[in-house]
Image (cartoon, rainbow over all chains, first blue to last red; front, side):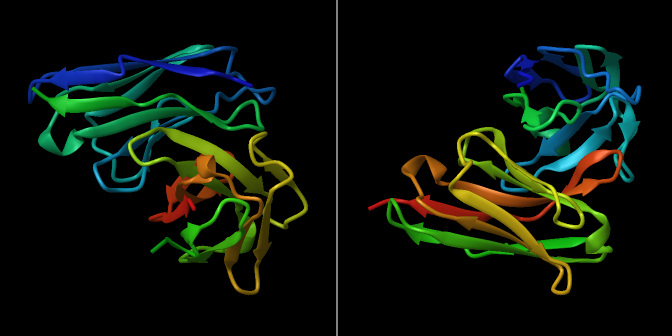
Length: 113
Length: 118
């Protein structure tokens, strides 16, 4: 199974400042078709997860452009360029390259300082 | 508008059974793979099972293999999860999740809570 490791697990951020979350996989997420199936999800308090980013760096419809994803191979990053109050929640990376199982990172809790 | 509405959760004794349902609307259900993902309150996400768009392919997490069965009824736009021989560690919120072809899991339902306790 592919193990997804996120860091940090807790991220206090000042409003308006950037936030960066790292996600590492135990093996390359490059698929045989050449794509990399690494997604990012946001789970606000009391809500279901919502996908923000698919295939490493593609923002979903309606996702603010302050969210960006990057990376390749086994190392990936989610950046929030300027954190807003509505960004509080837990962020998960997930791989869909080598399945089953589909696997998630442990989650990173973003909170306001 | 895409909607996934789960139901069927509740309190069940260890060794008991439950069947979860997820009614889909707002998209062509028969075109999409579907998944169940669970989350212990306050904890992380764990993938449970998937089913292909026509139901011909399924897979399960090791921890539920042999006890859970995923199925779908495209005429009713409904996804199911039959859960047998339930254990306390199966207690969680169960989410129904759509799989966007070529792009991966995308839309999540609101979840249904399963509690296994005597």
